[in-house]
Image (cartoon, rainbow, N blue to C red; front, side, top):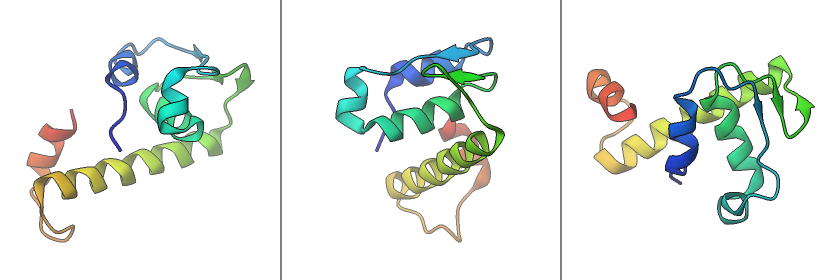
Length: 95
């Protein structure tokens, strides 16, 4: 499942600390949990999401989720097995 480009592009703004995604049409399409997890992973300085403080363990869980989803998407699109891939190609693709 590809993340909406709008959230990925906003993630490049590394000063975002507060983010509200409630009642967002993207959430109804991809699922609110998915959008929340990707948002937390994409915004490195995020401290408050949807009006609630972001806990350290939730950030860690969201970052693990992000890595798992990104690798899964890469392996499917490149049609390579997870045990035999070019890490340099992956890092270029993931940007």
